[in-house]
Amino acid sequence: MDPQPARPHWSKDADFSGTSFFIRRMNTRGRVSVPEVPAAALPFVGFLFLTEGEVLAEADGVQFLCEAGHLLLIPENRAFSIRYYSDAVGYTGGFRPDLVSSPDLLVPLIEPVHQAFWFDEGAFVGELFNMLALSFERADSDFIRKGLDLLLSRVRTRSKARVPAAVSVFLESVFSPGHPPKDLAAYAAEAFVSPGHLNRMVRKSTGKSVGAWIDIARLGMAKKLLGDTETPISEIAAAVGLADPSYFSRFFKKHTGLSPIAFRKRMHGLS
Image (cartoon, rainbow, N blue to C red; front, side, top):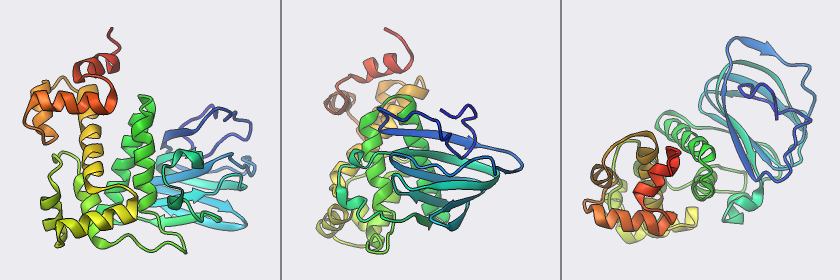
């Protein structure tokens, strides 16, 4: 791998055999031109997302100026290069297309996609990349798959219609940091649609039901609290919207194969 992982480019000599997903946190300071970096082609879909600064990338002879809130996707095996980066903070990495559960989310990715996410949507996508990075560090392949599905459901290609406003409201709300997931009726009320209509729109746009996304949000929040804090299990249950600690434990084990206590011990390196 690149010996300077903070930089927003990949080494042309990196060995990606056996890799289905990787992500790195990017944090560079100052303006740096990188003419020494030759055009490279990754054996998977490459991505670049910025929360600060800017990066100038080039692919297919077209230059893409990425700034805060911008996402750049490069199709697999497509030659690209980095022209410069300036105070760039964000995430960079790649994934193999077969890691995505629904092929429709990537079809047709036949050319680079450069998309800007503004305001609340940008903050949401930034938090999603942070959760993907944490999941990669913890080898949580289940959330990586679901997180990629969620990210790609919000990406617009020339042939894919914009995600309906009600679906965007739901996704931003259910993954809002620090807020316990609610039920279908509450999210439908926020989006000003009926519960049935919201569920149909979410399933059509993302391939998953409202209930499935609520479970994913609960698990992501619970894993973060279990891995990063010493918060009691009963309080974590309440924080993710499940008042009964026993039910929370069954829910967590059903989806992860581990009890909350066993998961916490694993994350803390305890036997």
